[in-house]
Image 1 (cartoon, rainbow, N blue to C red):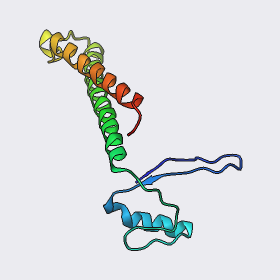
Image 2: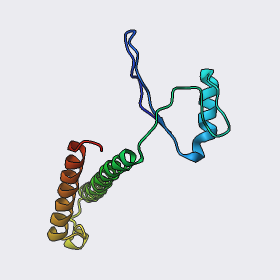
Image 3: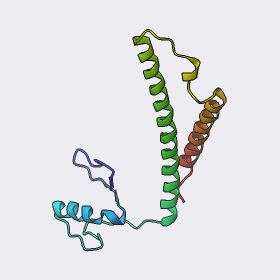
Image 4: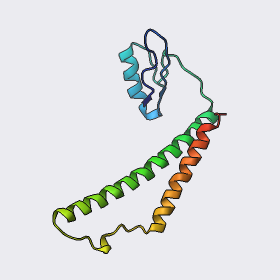
Length: 134
């Protein structure tokens, strides 16, 4: 389940959206019960419902997938840097020199390719976010 967070402040009204998958209906029923809202066996509640346009949801999914891809690539890069930093620190602490054989496996060409892919994916994400949902 995803909840958007606080939307109403200082006496103002607001809207919070809850997106759920079919496997989350039991959890949603528990939330409804804690709020004093009715919820049927299909997960339909007395809380206000909004109709969604599948095309818009698909367009949102494309944006989310691009963002996930950027995150995954950046995490991979970060882990590789942390591993390299750890190796260098251990070698320094032991007063050892690190051989070339322990250099990162990725060649500079592979690193450049990965950086290009991250930039390209970010560019695609920015382009998708700039386009209106249709």
